[in-house]
Structure formats: C-alpha cells, structure tokens
Image 1 (cartoon, rainbow, N blue to C red):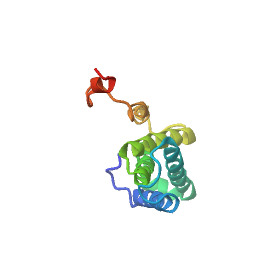
Image 2: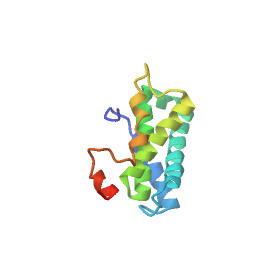
Image 3: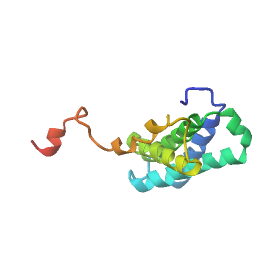
Amino acid sequence: ATAAYTDNVLDDFTYFGKEYVEDKYGMTEAPNNMDTVLDVGSEVTFYALEQFEDYPALLETVFGGLQRASLVAAAAGCSTAFATGNAQTGLSAWYLSMYLHKEQHSRLGFYGYDLQDQCGASNVFSIRGDEGLPTELRGA
C-alpha cells in the first residue's frame, strides 16, 4: 500500500522517528525488548496520527484508510528498527501501530480488507515449521 505516491509523508514520519531514536537512545543502541517497541512505536504512531488531525489536507493527499495506516506503521517499524538494529523488533512496532491506529479510528480501511494487517503480530517472534530447524531447538 505504500508504493503509491505519498508526497513525502512517509519521509516526515520516518525522520521524526529517527530523530526521536537518536535523541533518546542513539542509533541501534536501544535494548531489543518490548519496552522499546512500545516506546518508539507508540511515539511515532501518535505523532503521525496527530499530523493527520492537525492538517486536514494531509488526509486528501494520502487517501484511503489502509494506505494511511500502512504509512504510519512503516514509519513506526522503521524507527523501532533504527533504535534496536533488529528488523523483528521493527515488525512488532509495525503491528503495534496498526492496533493503535485501529483503536483510534475504529478501522484501517474499507470493507474489512484490513484483516491481513492485524493478524501478523502473533507470528513475529514465533518459529513456524518451514523456518529453521525446530527439532534442534527441542534438542532432538
């Protein structure tokens, strides 16, 4: 959804997150835990959602709820990955952002097409059967 022209909106949200991370933690120096996900992911998400409220023309630029949600989530995910240096932590912030966005606006997109953006958080740190060697983890 973010492949469409976004008029530097994603840049603004991501630069905000990058500056927040640099000021608070330093790049890739934050602990790789859920507290960092909650801190950085929430801060960037709330900043982005406030921008949509403060500048109504921004809603016109980035039309469609799911595109808006994806922009906000991408910025939250990138910023958290900047903080920890870990892509999985960034993905957790992506899904956290989707949940926060849905809580604030009651939906992400139209006609229920936002389901795929809400069902990934449970898979972020889990190992599925086709990834890696689960038998080695069990010691078998």
